[in-house]
Image (cartoon, rainbow, N blue to C red; front, side, top):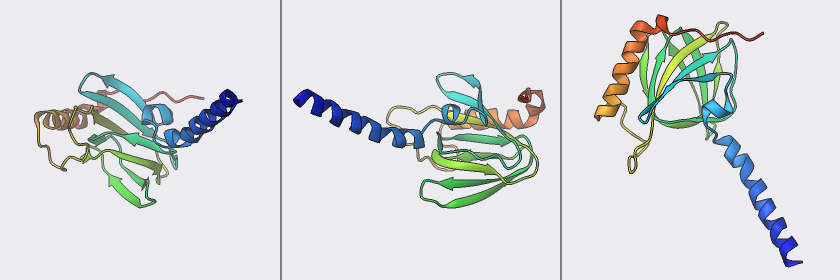
Length: 162
C-alpha cells in the first residue's frame, strides 16, 4: 500500500516536471527544423539558423553568443514574460545576444538565415554579460562572427526537404 502510494506520488511529481522541461529545451533539440549544428568544441557551438517565410518556433533556449545575419529579415521574439520585440537584420549584421528563453517568428515573405556562435558556459561565470566583449572568449566569438559575415557565402545552404 505504502509503495503504491509512493510510486503514484513520484510519478505525478515527475510528470509535473515534463512541461517545465519542454518549455526550456535547447534550441537544437526543441527546433531541429530551424537550428542545425555546424561546429562544436569546448568553447562554442556554431549554429545555422534557417526560418522559412512566416515560420515560428516553440519555446527554446539559447546561451550568450553572437549572431550574424546572412540574409535580410524581420524576426519577432517573445520572451518568457510575454514581452515581444521585433529585430530587423541586414546581411552581415553582427550582434551580441544574451542568454534567453523565447519563441521566434519570421515576419517576412522570404526565408531568413543566420549563423549563431553560442558560447559554452564557464564555471562561476554569469550568463548575463555586458553587451560589449569583456574577455578573450567573447572577442574571439565576435572575430569569428565577423569572419562569417565576410565569408558567409562559403557556408553551405541548408538542404530543402520535400
